Length: 226
Image (cartoon, rainbow, N blue to C red; front, side, top):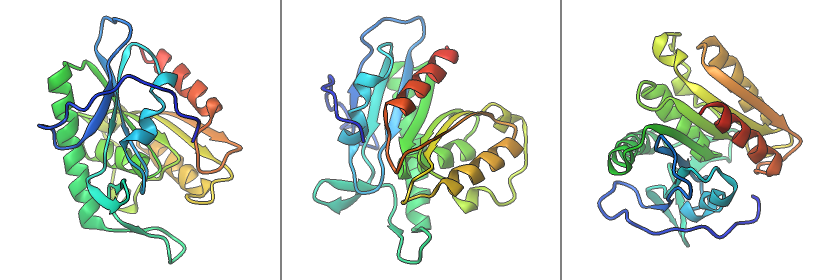
């Protein structure tokens, strides 16, 4: 990950289904825009909140904490086993987190009167962003997927329809990723193109991480969507 930058934060999340950190907009805009960021497995909300200083000043930047504690300040959206060579997930936990994130999105929209919302994340957080958007495309239709994949269960029996056409997705992945190899991103690209989503796809000479090139392209994409 890139080095953290100091960002304004607080923890107003007692009544919310997920704990979170928030940086409110530094610049007034016509629309209330927000990016919700979901961390990877074994991390916490502080991780992606460090990106706040690298994202547009007119957005709410919200970083949520996964509901499953792994100990030592580490959390997950679901447990995953990599021992077989391919990640094997806890399906029930993934479904629970998917529904929780959906509820959290609704709470954020209502609390902060959000007009335009992006759901995104890194690694497992990107996976969950895909899962929520593919389940609720009419409610979550702008996705930032950094070094993730689309779970097989969301690809079976899915056919193109007008709801999926509304999806607008930024997908980035490192060609040197040893945790989730680039093939996952290329498979996601093929699947999403069949659904006729609006897709901005990027590959980088990078491992399982985020760098300034990723953030530069992401910011350009966000500006284009205004």
